[in-house]
Length: 59
Image 1 (cartoon, helix red, strand yellow):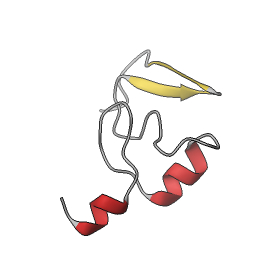
Image 2 (cartoon, rainbow, N blue to C red):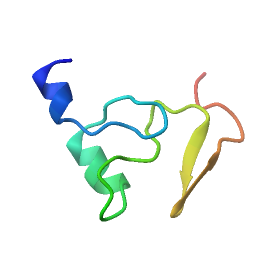
Image 3 (cartoon, helix red, strand yellow):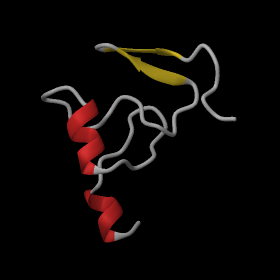
Image 4 (cartoon, one colour):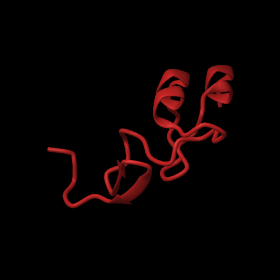
C-alpha cells in the first residue's frame, strides 16, 4: 500500500479506494467510508439508501 492509498477513503462494499472529494460528496455526515463507489457493479446509491443494481453499469 502506498502512502497516498493509506490516506484515501475505502469503499465499504468493494474495498476500492476513492478520492477524498468523492467521499466528502457521497458519504453521509459522520461516516468516513462511502457505502458504494463507481467501481461497484452490484450496488448503487438510491437516495439515503444503497440497493442492488438492476443491471450492471459496465458495457
